[in-house]
Amino acid sequence: MNVVTGERAVKTSAWLLYTLIVLEILFMVSPFAAYYYSIYATPLNLLQESSHTAWLTMYLLPHFTYSDSWLANGLVLVSWPLIFLGIVVFVVGFGQIYWSKFTGKGAVESGLYRFIRHPQYVALAIIGLGTSLYWSRFIVVIAFVSMLCIYMFLARVEERICLEKFGEAYRDYTNRTGMFLPRRWEKRFCRLAIPLPRAVWLRGAVLVGIYALVLVLTIGAGQWLRGHVIDSLQIDDGPTRVTVFLAPVSPQTKEVVADLMNRSELPGLIAYVAPSSWRIPELGFTGTNGQPEHGGISELLHPTTHGNSLSFDEDKLTVLLADASGAGADVQGIDRFTRALNIQPIEFVELDIVAREVVDLRLPAEGYWAGIPVPTF
Image (cartoon, rainbow, N blue to C red; front, side, top):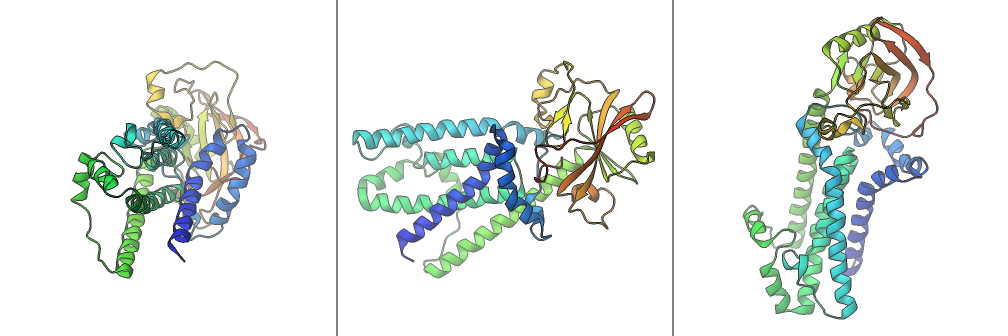
């Protein structure tokens, strides 16, 4: 394999990883989300067929469940600003490059390129980070980290080509600017750089080892974050089923609901409890026609409620009873929920909190995401 072919292969890999990172969120916000996402679901379902790869489809951060973790809320809160910032940086960098080509001015050293040499890679990384936080599957996070490593390789290859083409002028430019961060910032990180051996095969082995270590640390950090998030949710681990409260409720309401779920002869291993006014397409909650009150800044600071109001009537709650797939028949306790890869809705029930009874049952309609791996919290 020659250098050109190898470079093309790496670039193709980078774009495939980037597609994996960004495509899911683009599917979800498009008008044809259900159709496109059903196609994207095929590889996700394949991953879930094996116990060795099923964990890759799990989520790290909450998507529609209230969390009292400032870390989880903060990470989700900054996801969309990062996406928009990345788009702006990419458009500016793209415009500078192609305006220079159109006008025949040669190498670009002004604007963003005055401070960093690869602003478009930085922009794509920012977009990838935002989408990885918003749609935080393990496989997406791993792809994001892998993409960053590939960008580093591509940037070095491109700089070698530019140095051969522009000579000392480009070398002077690299001495004035940083690769991905302003020069002053990068100098601090350069002190942490690991010296690489000169032998090509040994250098490659060291780089592969560093990449493997980065993946291990990423997965470990992801597992810790997921555990922290689950601890921040309102969950009752009952003997009959695990009850997950999608909205914050008072201790009294939580006690009543948990008692109803544990003593009622109802099906399902998991019970998702939400205000009757809430709408959550992934679970089939359709909400009501009422006009809910808005909580202002409190809703903004809790973005994991899927856009639903935190002002609701605690006496009107709807419960989705569901079975979990992937958890295993012998799994007990909270693991019935934490190990679930997907859910199969069984029925909805309406609760009368004042009377402490189940007042209505109905079968769930065929949802948009039927057969598609969706978040479980």
